[in-house]
Length: 505
Image (cartoon, helix red, strand yellow):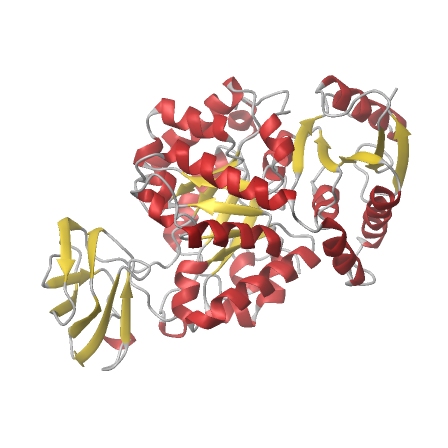
């Protein structure tokens, strides 16, 4: 299902402003070669120090996330510019993901940390002035109509759980799970009672600002249907940003296939999703979302509380380490750090730790079994226009399996061929080659992919020859190795219809 661009005005990037953005010309790094699963790191006060931001990029961050739920547009732009500049200086291809707030219900900010003990009575009321240990103001006019006596009210992704005991204009509630709150945490309102749509007018204002400067990816919060994704109204990627649907509502699970089809990628946002579903269903649901995304050739991010204890501790819990590894074995394209890097005590250590865990899990990943399962699925529907590319990536996977192929060189204008290849999780390295810089930044999120710039476009023969030369120059393949080269019939090719097995001269 494509964007209904006849109904919503397209948000086009300013070519003048985009052209001035710095970008690296080479991208080979030992970290990228060793680790296939990508790392998304959230930016925040803890990464505003340039040395810290540079440190997490050097530690192996593939995509940086600007969480627009916090701070102003100007704050986000400062972080955007800093990533672009430092990534260029470090010769790294780092994607930037702008995460729209969506219809998020938040409490009015706590002036200082407030601790709540089990059995305490708390009053929730509509307001935006401020909250404390006895009165929590919520900036949502429909607060009282969203809950009934006996309902649980979850604040801050479970940091505080209340039970409503009386509901009138205000809500009287009892603390069930004690906890402490700071800042302006979110209040979970069940999706079927949420009286706001996605994207919100505020989302669209933020979207316009970041599309104008050429942001690579945009995450849409609280998606409930494919219609929500189409309402965003941006141009298809790579002319526009790659749209990432955050699956965090029960409605999104029910409409998952349509959402996957209408999106460029998916994020399993386990915080709010865990509030919508019984907790015992969450791991099963996570695995199913990942499986369906990979079957459709769409990158998928596993997010929320992956190394949560490292916000304040120097090492993760054993359960957290297992959580990251299991996400890798489920086939996730990327794992995400949230508060760990945005407000944690040591963002660089968090990225390094995530990298070590993911790298080790990658080493023992069962590539052959995974690829066989993916190949058994029907990837594309007849008449979709992608059958040829689908068939060629299947052939490339078989070549990797049966021949001594060290790398698959995918030449792609939009990144589609690269993402289709990545779903097989081949043991051979995937090189995503494109003349489009934004395509390369978007490929920073694709599993096992090293984005590589092709200096010039040309005919099929010219581009295939150039792809091998660039890969050799970058040190990604060596003389004597056998590589697979996937590409179309030249500049602007609509399908990938050429596969060659080449011995590197």
